[in-house]
Length: 340
Image 1: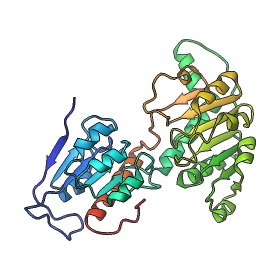
Image 2 (image 1 turned 180 degrees about the horizontal axis):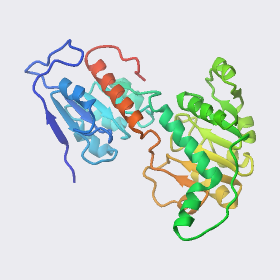
Image 3 (image 1 turned 180 degrees about the vertical axis):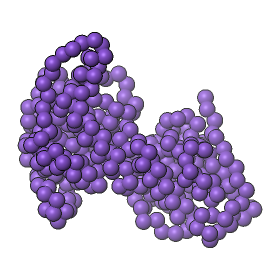
Image 4 (image 1 turned 90 degrees about the vertical axis):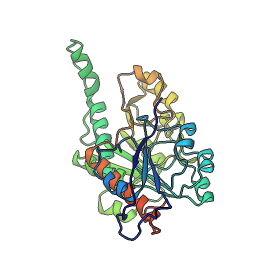
């Protein structure tokens, strides 16, 4: 069992220079993002100077509902990692004013419950886009040339010949042309790939200026050699890539998901990968995290990474800085431009 790590501070002038904590009021902040640890992130100096008391995640993983409820008691601000912030959690906290997500996704937060309680939710959109786009491209390359499988076989003493495919001249279908999708499109064009994009809210001018073909969903599914998912998880997008949709894809198509678990029907994907109908699957996110034993683990045409797409030094620093800024902005009574 772990216990919260505490940092106690006496009263400090906050980072914006407009408020000093009164001796009668102590500001307590919770930090659960596992990348933010005392002594390891310089940006936390600003938070430590702003708050009287900070409690850090002692577990090194996202907190459960039952762990969050006592952890957040007395906290006015909360820098959240990948915890499930349910209605029960939100209705159980006593002083919370702001949830500042270390990251862009807010699908694990009950936003309606937060609004009802008057709790502001902020996120850090776009700051990890280059990191996520890099990993998506890496998964594509590895699956196309079977790098992961060949590395394993060579280490085992096997010397095999395996024929892959080239990315050059292939068609990539990007579902969700936000910051990450745009980053993937730029990288794909560096490989002379044709870029199709589907997004209900697509920026047509951007697409036209950057040689991206706007496509309907069904046409993209049928025409793309590689399909990349870069969209949020909502009731409408859950299992968007269903068995029926995967059956409509080109034989040998590769699917990449660095967005959110739950977008793909994983059981159907396994069957189609095993039969050879699909050519490859790269996942950084899962319906259940961490995933328990899955038949996908046994397939050579699957690459699985542990939700680390945004884990680069550059992205971590940017997310840390923005999440701290967002929290301080709200608790200083100012308007945060990244409120969800």
